[in-house]
Amino acid sequence: MVNHFARMTPAYARLVGQAGTDIKKEITITREKAYPFKILQAKARNGSDIAFDLQEFSKTDGNGYVLTISNKKMAAGRYADSVILTTDSSIKPTITIPVYGQVISAEPQPVPTPPIKGPSDE
Image (cartoon, rainbow, N blue to C red; front, top):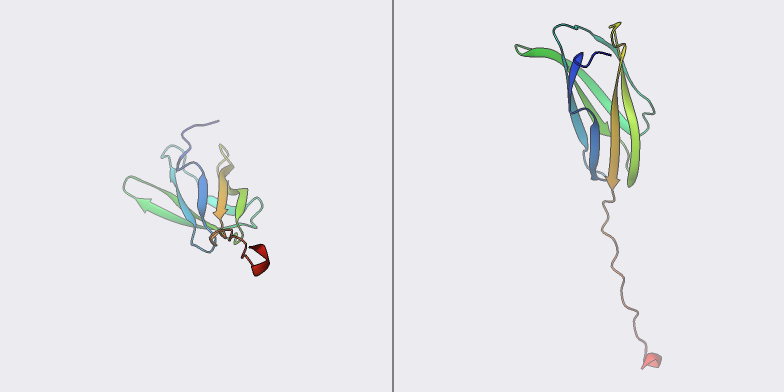
């Protein structure tokens, strides 16, 4: 396996935030000049809690892709998924990006109220 096939910054997506807010993470995939490749397809292993967008870029210091992963989960809780990128490279035909999500409840936790005393409680 080639370690320097591509640089992924960061190597995984950690989506943490309150329910109902915009939770996103960008991952930059920079191609190494010695191993040019194109991403042919992107799909989620599960996909029920995430959405993603893949855009190609070209800069003087390198080119590659920006993968933006967004949370779709509305209820509080945790999940794990992966985005699987299919490439045209025989060296590394797939790149897997792990995704970890934690949605925190947006409603404040109710404060317990003391019981109301009636005339018979005195």
